[in-house]
Image (cartoon, rainbow, N blue to C red):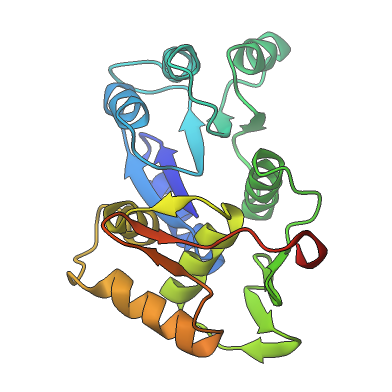
Length: 225
């Protein structure tokens, strides 16, 4: 899952990224509102946004309003030191999906983020299943036909993207940004290698190549979903 973190406090941003890394989130960080708005309205694929309100260049509430006016439904969790009830209501009315005031516990941030992602995908449980595969994002475990399967961090992140969006065709560039983000050097064939490993560890047809476009994990039969 790819998360955009918009926070101007470098120390706090570093701590959040470090805390989310074991959860296998790919976290891209932006420190000002104007750049964040550009990223969110130019088609970058993010699964959720953690947005501070007190930002330079463009206030977080203005970013929130503009993103919603643009038509984006990306889940947005607002972080702020503004704990007045009026501020909370204003943020939610502007389009925030949830609100967390500073200081906060990392465990609560993770839980709220998981809940946002579940709701955005129409899930009651965080566990993803289909085609005999069971992926638990909380415990970071995967099984196929009842047997545990050991996946690397990238393989798990890739599988989670496909299982969260069955039937969606992903280009290689989109998958690269979702799994690696902005800050890492990536080999040109990295996605192909990860998909090859998933096919070998699960089953050959788990991810289908759409020639000339990219890859897709087909929707499972209803009785297997």
